[in-house]
Length: 326
Image (tube, rainbow, N blue to C red; front, side, top):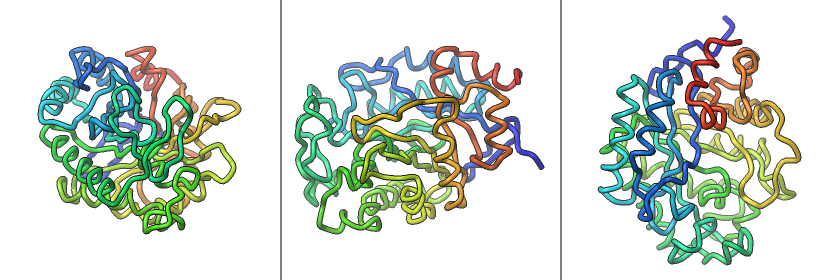
């Protein structure tokens, strides 16, 4: 049977009505102390009706891991209460909603960061400055911050968690040999470099259990010599997939290097590589703008779902158009 955008699919225990989800995109509308606002409630509820799931923007687990001065977080109970308003508004449209949990690591914004942390003391660029190499105590503390964020995500009513290991943030920094030069159990071999993500996932599972949907967002290429490749990321996922319900495949962000071009579906080949290695649903993302192209990706077996980002940012009704216009 040919798979199309209109077909249902499961992510773990969660049944989705179609194979189009809303990708997480920064809105830069948070308060100075990282609280979501009425803007977020309106923005996400307006886009919720036709997609099968919404993943909200990157939501930080620590005040010391903020991406921007106007991002949002879930590092206190009060943050969870403000996020609950978004969840309720999206649920009112009959759509499930995931939270994307993040720690920025060396890409934490300098003006709102007391101490920049990273697996190794290697700067992203001059603007962010030189981070401190994380001690075992630092690693343990951040793992616990992810655990508590997962607990608060349940309290806020989210239907699942996307763990952000892409775009150069802390989990991605541990995975890539370009940013991880450690010589302990968290560095060197791929098995060691994936360990931090494994421990974060294990901590999250202690809070949410085995039946709660948890997926991982990855960058399948660092666009730089010596960096991650799709095949290596796929191998890393073989260590992780027993704790995951899906994987969301993006690219870049670890170093300032960028792809030479971003044509239609430019990241889809990365998803196709990863799909050969894992037995969980794979989500493709990146300049997917027509129903015909989305159906081609699904029918050809390159991915199991597609995530729509910028088109939904530009047009709240884009989800409806994708489902009705070829």
